Image (cartoon, rainbow, N blue to C red):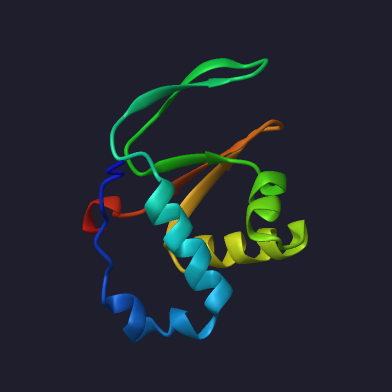
Length: 106
C-alpha cells in the first residue's frame, strides 16, 4: 500500500535537533502522521471535528504507549517542540491537536 511521502528539511541538521534522538523521532512522527489534507475525524463522546492539513489529533497516553516512553517524557518533548517553533498544541480535556508550523516545507 502506498502511504505517500514527505520531505525532510535539512535545516534540522543545522539546528542540532538530531543531538536529541527522542526529539528527532517525535518530530518525524508528527511530520509522517500529520494530515496531508483537511478531513473530518470522529472523536468518541465529542462527535466530528475538522482536522486541517498539517495537524494531528493525539493523546499523551497513546503517544507514550506508541513510543514506549513515560507520559512525562512525552510532555517534556512536546514542550520543546512548541518552544523551538516546530508546532503549536491546542489541548482539550479529551485530546490534543498538534499543528506543524510551516507544514508545507515538509
